Image (cartoon, rainbow, N blue to C red):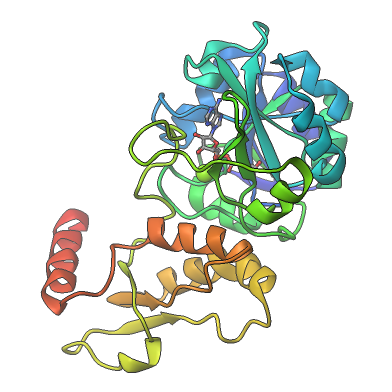
Length: 321
Ligand code: TXA
Ligand code: MG
């Protein structure tokens, strides 16, 4: 049975013993393990059914730790770190040999992040371990933003979840690669492209279909109920008797609040057993880019015709029955 606990010592013991645990960060909850222990990292892949080709971010407590695990770090990284770390940004750097291949899925690079959540930072400091942690959801599913969400994803698969309350940000870190000449934003997140470019100048988008972060699979964050992106949620009030759930962002005052509630609202709607969920995209600027990215990956596409919805529903019920 999986327990939600507040006792840090128990969690530290669990990690030192080579086990995995659910851990709070300011972005989303992570499934953490000692990054230098190959068997422990293997348990992360097994616990969340993660494909082995998808590398895992390593979390450290201080900016000065970047040099322990990253090699050839350009000055631009330190300029960004001064402004945004600890916080929701992950730097992809050439790795030092001390990082096991299993963490990086055989790549020569490692993703490093200094999380801002005080419990998580304390845990790294007190355990004296770099912590490998992907989001604590089953592969392809919605990222968890509370300890209870982690429980619903991984109940019975881990011993403990450290309760750090609801995540303050609610959407994952921005992932930026420094392997090429010009920094590339591999995953849009809370720190926006504009925020980054103000500090270090031009960044690039990865070329479509070419180098892309291995984990950036097209389908991700998917609820069990098919989600469709529509132009205007108010224009759709009936679909041949299907029950429709609306992911409604109009109740939120800004993009930060929308990002904060995106995954938890999606999770709530998913429990309601609607036939379909519909959502509108938000403005494609600033944090909106990250929100729209998550929506697109969570969705089954645009709502082009009712037949595709019915077919998807039929396939789904055949799968679960
Ligand atoms: O906010 C976050 O980043 C959360 C919290 C727990 O820190 N973590 C998170 O991890 O979202 P995950 O594994 O769900 O997403 C990390 C992304 C994946 O797309 C992965 O492929 C990419 O970062 N990534 C990690 N290491 C990489 C590397 N060495 N090269 C390229 N991409 C990498
Ligand atoms: Mg994830």
